[in-house]
Image (tube, rainbow, N blue to C red; front, side):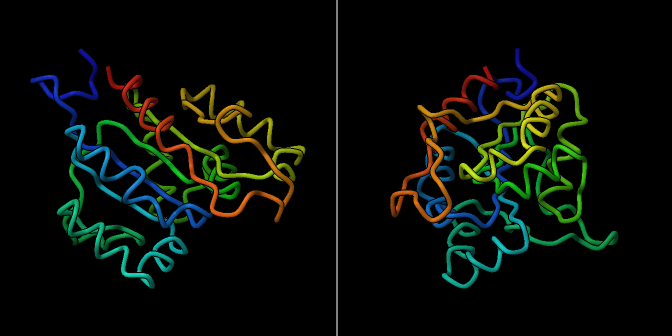
Length: 192
């Protein structure tokens, strides 16, 4: 039995971590609602900028109402209780080039990266990352090393021309949908 499932074989808590990138506005409908429909309890953590984006549009409140948990976008005080239960699987989507690079280097300078960095050091805890990047990011000389580091840590990367074709900066089709179905399939596969 996978450690990501409860003793009755049903999903546990899915930790969703998101960065400020295009498509973030569809996090609720593309990932959170389908995960809840699959039986997951969902705990959302955002980078500080992603938190500002979703708060400004009222989406942060919608996520909290839907999940029944606070959406985190900053660290708690040591005296504060933990706002989320233990997570059985993490999904970082969308993950900006900045988030991916910091995660690959072990830099945990915000709550979202702290959770992901700890997850990489936790045996048996699946981590799925969708790098929301463009062709210029992929050509950076450090990018292949970042991806290698994450793969060596056991991260399942959602990428490739069939999933997320790379375009030059400012040249991607408008309103391009994030590969939510592929991300959800990766969650299913990682937690069987």
